Amino acid sequence: MDYAIEVFVTYMRDVMKKSENTIASYASDLSKLKKFLAERDITEVSEVKKSDLTDFIRSLEEKNFKAATICRNIASIKALFHYLEKEKM
Image 1 (cartoon, one colour):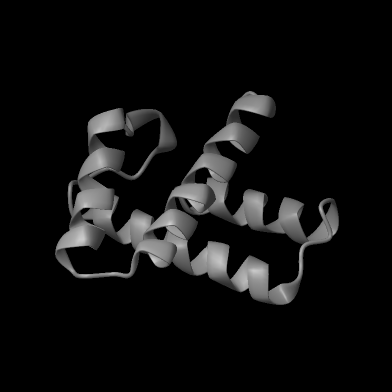
Image 2: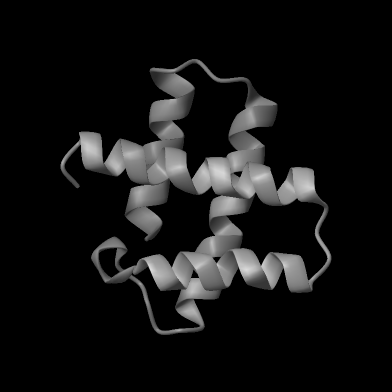
């Protein structure tokens, strides 16, 4: 997961020219996801299942994150996986 997130954040900065605030927010969101997955012994992107992502979102809801924060986390995850798919990673 580390490499995938690192490459994606670099892409956001260098190619997409996203603001530093956007990059920091997405990196933070993806770091939370990475930690959640690591607790399930998932360290590779190829190991992630839809149910893992659903469980992650549920965990955010259970921690009473605001709806806007949860939506941004979903956007971060979608953006990462769309990028990885586009790059055939």
